[in-house]
Length: 408
Image (cartoon, rainbow, N blue to C red):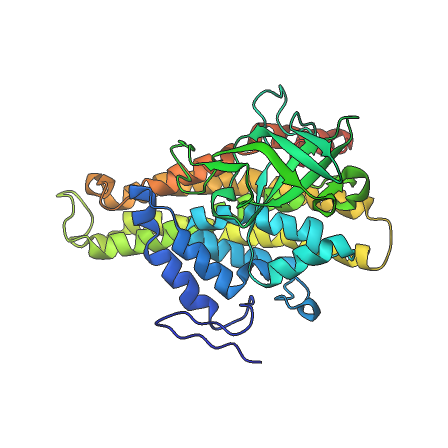
């Protein structure tokens, strides 16, 4: 059935896909309020409700299962465009999209069927993984506990940096059983004992809901637990290629937004410097050069992310043929890692160059143009580039494989 959207009320019929004509007005609507939401720290609850209704979170679910049937290249193309519209909203969906890859898209069990149905109906999944009392970031350990309670379990712990969970319908929580077995509990955020605290105070990505999740004797049913031993997507090598590339795609989207803002800024400027080469800023060859560099950076960032997405599609093909996926998985992680090193740099440099287009007046809070640098730098601080670049260099020099944990 063709999808129908009423531009006044955004009524959808069928999930929005990567090629839906309805995607463009949806992204335009999201972009319209992005600067104000960032500047005034306005949470995009209404935007997430619209995304639920569009069922955008089912983009990668197979069409036969009611989803958008997108390839990785198509998915990451949409993420770039969403990052262009509002990097906060794109980041909110990161853990949801990773959840779909890990638990929904290719898993065929009765336990996973209910999560597939929820995603297809528009539900959003968040993540509560990080713990500040663990000395190493990015390992698979957890101090959050799952203890038996009759035929069910009780979940207790505190998680930090729970990106997206403030807006989510379900949250995935990393925990361990009394015998030390590790696994994940997937529970509704509305369940008694789940507290989502809006205490994220970073200078960028201000409204991603990346706060604290407190879990107090949360009831967990047996079919809401997935142990590592049965979670093949988590136990395989390099499970982080998708989530790390999502962050990079958002930064590529930020570069596209910077290009858009640079063009708008130079076209609305009426004043120029007395020693400038042209009376109108838009005619100034030096400013044209800056905008041209930003536009080139946007092109390169998008192309780099899509090339890494192609490596994930090749992994899908190998997996679909039932072949050994180890080499293809490593290749996908390596491509995602290289993309991060390049795109993060393009994003922060482009964000700084934007102010060369506008001068001092462009720094007014009214325009909120500093959000691009703040957001890009915050995103690039996830899984730091220095560790990625070193591992890539070791592989190039000695053939050493990438680490299998720590966001690779």
